[in-house]
Every structure is written in C-alpha cells, then in structure tokens.
Length: 323
Ligand SMILES: NC(=O)c1ccc[n+]([C@@H]2O[C@H](COP(=O)([O-])OP(=O)(O)OC[C@H]3O[C@@H](n4cnc5c(N)ncnc54)[C@H](OP(=O)(O)O)[C@@H]3O)[C@@H](O)[C@H]2O)c1
Image (cartoon, rainbow, N blue to C red; front, side, top):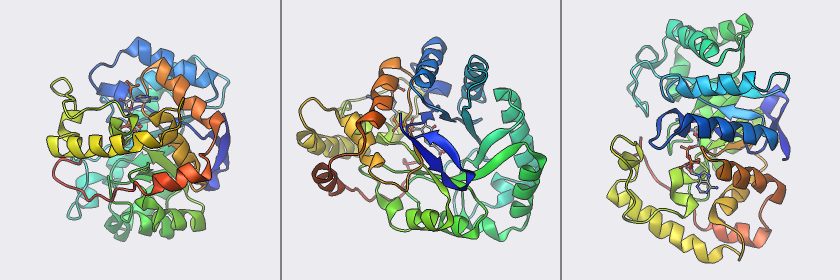
C-alpha cells in the first residue's frame, strides 16, 4: 500500500481508503462479512475510512467503531458526515443553511457520530450535501471554528453533490474547508476542470468517491440488472442510465490488457492523478478488498492506456433519478 499526504492536515493516508455506504444498508449486506472485510483492509494497510450517519442511521458508523476497538493502537483515520436536516439528497440551490445544516444541528450530529463510532474526536467531519451559496451565511464559518476549537473534530470537509464539482470551488477558495469529497472516475473526469486546480492551490484534500460509478465501472452490470426492492440502485440505474452505462462499460473492455480487470483499471486510472489524496471504493466483500487494495501496489496506469481511457470521459448533468 502506498500513502499520500492528505491536504494541509499532513496525515499520511492509504491511497486506497474504504467507502462504507453499502454495508450500512444496501441489500445483501452482512455485518459479519463487512467486519471481516474491514479487518482485512487494515491488515493490508488501509488507514482511511469514510462513513456517515446516514449510512443505516448510524449502523455503518457502529461497524467502524467495532473495527477501531479491535485495532486499538493503530492510527486509523475516521471520516464521517452530518446528514442534511431535510434528508434531501442532493441539495438544491434554493435550500438554505437552516433547511440543511443549522449550526446547533451540526453540533448535535458531530456528537452523535462521535458516540456511534466511540471516539473523542473525528478526524474529518463532512457536510453530506453542499451549496456554495451557504458561504454567504456567516454562521457557517463560526460553527466550523467552534468545532475545531472544541477538539471534537480535527478537520472539516464537504461532500459535493453528484455531477456538480463546480459547486464547491468557492468553498475551496474560501479557505474554510480542509477536504472535498467528489465523484471522480473514468467517466466523471470533470473535477479536473476547476475543482482540482483550486484544491492544489489551496492545499485542500481530495477524496475521490464512487470510483466504480456505483458498479457501472466494475463491468458486471447488464441491461437486465435489477436489485431487490428498496435498494437505491434501482433508482439510480433506471433503464435509460443502465443502458447507457452498460454500453460505455462494454466500450472499455477491449482496452483492458489480458490478465487485468476493469475494476483494477478503474482504480489505477484515478491513481494517475496526483491531485487525489485517497480513493474510497465501496466494499463489503473480502475478495473486493483484496483486489482493490492490490491496485495501489500495481500503481498508476501506463501512459498509453491512460490516454485512451481519458477519451471515455462522460459529462453528465444532475437529473431526476441521479440523486
Ligand atoms: N454523497 C456522498 O457523500 C456519497 C455518495 C456516494 C458514495 N459516497 C462514499 O463513496 C464510497 C464509494 O461509493 P459507492 O460505494 O457508492 O460506489 P462504488 O465504490 O463506485 O461501487 C461500489 C460497488 O462496487 C462493488 N465492488 C467493489 N469492488 C469491486 C471489485 N473489485 N470488483 C467488482 N465489484 C466491486 C461493491 O460491491 P460490494 O459492496 O458487494 O463489495 C459495490 O457494489 C461510499 O461507500 C461512500 O463512502 C459518498
């Protein structure tokens, strides 16, 4: 496992971190399997874990707490998120700070997450949705300062809405945030346009999420893929998105060298970008942990393949099903 320095915090984090959404509530989750996968990741050098109160109303956080206690003495970095008060993902331009993150409510959820995970301080707390317009509300910088001064969080970050990397550039430039979490993968390369240069300039950490486009870039989906009732992927992969995603993933397959896999290439593609501090693939299975953490040892992609893959950029705009 290789490590990168994460933004101005100076922490050395594993370049493959751990995304903990699925184990909080996607159908097919099994706590014993999730805990085994988390432990395996630590044994292989992973030290950065991204969870959120919203991942199963604290359940994913509690699994992380168990894992931390089983690994006392190891420096493991904990990132969680405050859910928007109105429980609406993504946020919209017309939502106010009071709709989503009133100051008292932020404090309340920092305490909830600390209790759920069982830590005195969270390394990173992120707002689970974001609008750059909220910067105009002077209560927000005050709240962030109070949190840092309280010692309950070491760093403050924002998680940007899907396909809106522009809606975070002002926050990065404001100097207020230490980290941004953004979708970045072979399809979604648009954070490179404005967001990453701003992060570089202001030493803001980049947490690259959804490296597999929620499964599309694992190459395992077909136009007939369906998930059990209640699984949110039925909403994201509506027929029109599923068809387009499968077509685009199929177009990538001929580029994958013999003996390599699409998921491995998807992660290594992101490793090519030095602006990225850590990548957080979602994993619930030991075999996925083994494969994904192994991508770090294989390193960035050779230049020729990287260049070919860059042509598969897919610019998308938020729509009614995209969340
Ligand atoms: N708004 C936000 O802040 C937000 C939104 C979305 C995600 N996130 C964060 O980003 C993380 C990653 O995103 P995600 O989990 O939604 O999507 P993702 O990482 O793009 O995809 C996860 C899916 O890929 C599968 N997978 C993982 N490794 C694989 C491999 N080597 N081969 C084949 N399949 C593999 C997983 O299966 P198994 O689960 O069965 O192992 C899961 O179904 C989340 O867990 C969460 O921490 C944040």
